[in-house]
Amino acid sequence: MTRKKVDLTYVISDTKRKATSKKRKNGLLKKVDEISTLCGIEACAIVYAPNDSQPDTWPPSDWGVQRVLARFRRTPELEQGKRMMNQESFLRQRIIKAQEQLNKQRNDNRKREVIHLMLHYLSGGKMFDDASMLDMNDLSWLIDQNLKEIDRMLNRTQEVNPNDGGEQQKQEAAHVDHVQQEITNVDVMQKEHHWPLMGFFNGAVGDEMLPFGDVGVKNGIWPSPHAL
Amino acid sequence: MTRKKVDLTYVISDTKRKATSKKRKNGLLKKVDEISTLCGIEACAIVYAPNDSQPDTWPPSDWGVQRVLARFRRTPELEQGKRMMNQESFLRQRIIKAQEQLNKQRNDNRKREVIHLMLHYLSGGKMFDDASMLDMNDLSWLIDQNLKEIDRMLNRTQEVNPNDGGEQQKQEAAHVDHVQQEITNVDVMQKEHHWPLMGFFNGAVGDEMLPFGDVGVKNGIWPSPHAL
DNA sequence: CGAGCTATATATAAACA
DNA sequence: TTGTTTATATATAGCTC
Image: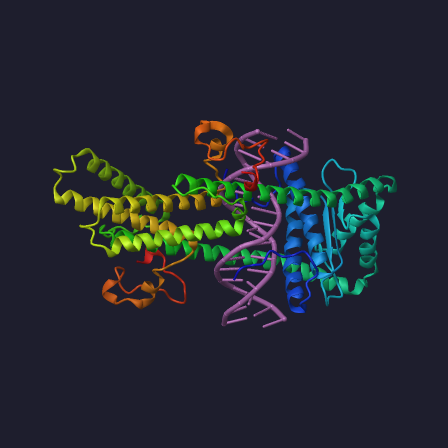
């Protein structure tokens, strides 16, 4: 059912556009109602829905709208230049904000990459020789491989008679469980935006435990895995 | 940090009202921008924020607003009565919707009560003699009691030497585990709004399994537990 | 005050009835 | 087409700095 992230462009599909305009129109008018009520301020919205000769508005009554419009028209033109400028900067601010969020997102992704790496290391895997493996797709692949390996081993354990299996195999299975646990933990961490290993990278633990040499977190910016 | 559920009344606190008006004003203008972009329709909003001589608007430019206003003024007065009516009914619809949600909520609560009851029954507890126990507070209390009992029994099991405990006690502990499992399941079901036992109440299972006599689900409306 | 953060409340895209 | 349901995306209240 996965709702898309809504790219802010004209909706091509006639059906969808109509549906979304209806929903959003209601939501919008409700918002105007709320801000008026909560903050006791004058506000007004006019929306021309498709196929309607008349617009929907807030306030709902015509005289209510007229009152706000009258006030607006009364506004000294002198100050309108200022307002216009403010609105333009408003747009710029939104762009800047979006860029900031993008950077944050990138940083989060780096965290995930590094933590995946570290878990692999902790769970007994060997370090990568080739740094080019370290982009997200390759890491996905890596996780998939781990999961497949786990499946394979668990199935093998089931096939054999539990009573004659050697100790070696049991240990193997236990290790697999451990890996699976670690992977589960990663998922939880990603969901909760909670990074229990943060302290580790910040030097809370002795250097002998750092698998990545002296690359650390500077000013809250995580190093690109390619730098490791 | 618990954000309150925002009661839609004038915010008394001067500080809070100012803060909320600022945030919501931005949100509102953003929404207008979005609906215009997504649906390609004309829309306009005018918000008078406190302490500002000029209102904030969408579209941001003065001529943009004027264009919408001109169109609005041009509207034949004949049809405005209809629009006004529609808007009034809009309000009524919101009230009706709220009431529907309230009813739904009540029905959900009944489901929970009944399922709690049933789990208690299935897990070996005795049925209640007194129907007055069956409101939510009492049921909360009931669950608490069950949990305490579970704790007590688990602790008792640990205290004793596992090697000399009789089979009876082990069964008891197993039963407790079962109860705990059931309770966990209830929590999961509540969270996911998923009711695997629904079919049970709808007669999917033979009558001999129904602990509550012939009281069933009619038209999707669950009986009040007091009727059981 | 203004900016930023986090936990919740709301809005709403899709899928379905 | 309108209404419901469900999973996500967004908006924001209350804090903190």
